[in-house]
Image 1 (cartoon, one colour):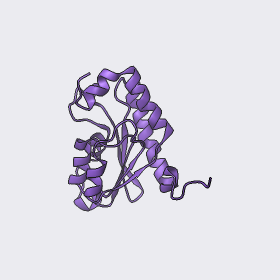
Image 2 (cartoon, one colour):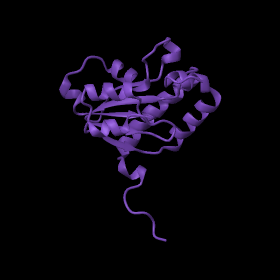
Image 3 (tube, one colour):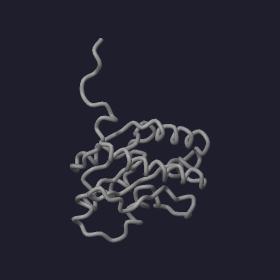
Image 4 (cartoon, one colour):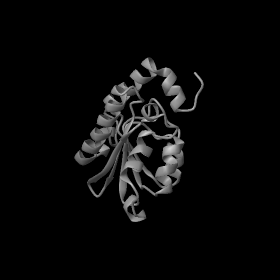
Length: 163
């Protein structure tokens, strides 16, 4: 049987994309080591990292500090044109809150480490013209599998579910 046609997940990203996703993964691992949810993000404009962030809801006692919102907050106030020419890298498919933030600022592309563990907003993001590239990264998958096994209560809280 011939191999499937079309790009594989890794082939849709460049070497630079891989490096920026690795920064997000590093943030996710830091978050895990701090006792939080292992989701990281990086906001990049024209090849320059504006900020990295990680889910810090547990660490900060915050209701909204997901990886993506943390990275965007850490980038500080930016001109609309900067957001509109940036890429958001995240280890996990964004929730609606993070998708809404990215859409509000018209971030045109999101590179997603994995969406097996969680997927809520991708169809909505795509319908708003956001380019989504899902990498299906094994490290991202493993981090979330570990989260759901070892800290299921915190994960359910993070996504607004009852245990």
